[in-house]
Length: 72
Figure 1 (spheres, rainbow, N blue to C red):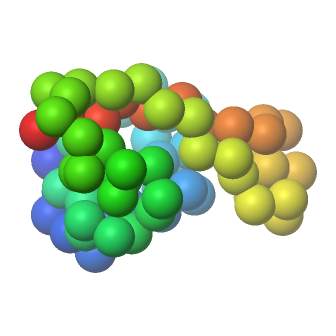
Figure 2: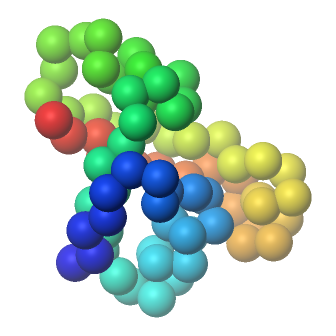
């Protein structure tokens, strides 16, 4: 399990870790992506979300979405 602080998450890093079978947990900035901002404004303890990948990244990895679980 890779634990990382703010400033590290990015689509490419997450996809590389998933491709290598590495589990990870990133602490995220509250306003980094819309899904995270919405989650932070909710009362949910966790949520499954799908990040739509930028076209270039999606083509590179052969994926259109990146499914992740957000937790408090």
